[in-house]
Image (cartoon, rainbow, N blue to C red; front, side):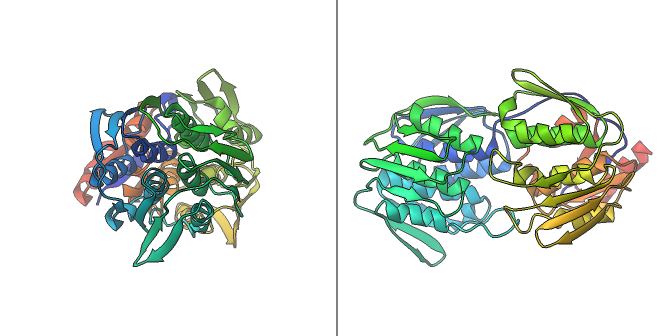
Length: 430
């Protein structure tokens, strides 16, 4: 098993380029099979989740060819299998987007119940409610979701809870239903808008993505397109908090500042200087930051995927901070690891109280999930000691060349695969 080993205590300084949004790309790759024509998608992040999704698509008969590291050409013309096996779904939860794509195009789909990061219960009842409302018969049998319909018909659907996955999945199916579908109480995240824009570029008729109500006029057929995935707001936010925690000066390039408003607002509250440009944001932290209070909410609120990163930064800030996690119930696991590094935290239910400390001490910790793993790397970079992070496979699922990008702005971090390599790093760094 690989680990990251980090020697911290140096401010991160410089520029870092942000890749394509993983969460948008996973859904867009699924939607790409909804036409028999060829689709070209670029600005894909080269991360494990994307590669697993491409394998899943190829596994059902689609033609998948990598043009380069960040570009892929896909044709769904020869799809012969409507069943997505557990082998793929256990690795990435987003494989369930193939349910909406296959149901929309072929009126039949069979997908294993999903896996992914262990950050809490993420029920798919709203997905199934939406498919059933469009007329599909949906059953769960033998660990699989089976959905079938003769003709999908547009419907007025009100989601009981705001769900990004359900919004995207039902939107894909409805794009090829007969008549008008109206979705209410939908998710407004940037990647929902990106998927809608992608489908529209293929000939779909979707209006209102990014607002409370999405209207979809179904079409019989979708056509090929060329499309570029939006930048990843979570990757950008991770490097922004890394700058804050290490008292650094980092400019994140290739971003949409509008998507980062909630993150920027908290950094400014904490005492950072933030400068916005057309497609870049600069974060400067001079000295120790201030405490603040955070509650995770659906977009445009503070994202749950940024909660561990701000948590680490608050643990080094002056005063007492509180975090209320309103999306996932298991998202505080990283705080137990952070306490091993000297953080002062108290967890009660879905809220955490963090008493800021002057500094952390290096320790051996384990990444409990993707974003928490990245946050623990930030903690390691912010302490004078040496930190070893186990289970970095989680981090590699969602961050491209993470250690390389951190080294590019002054971080001392290496990926190692043995105790001997760890000892060599320690001897070399001293």
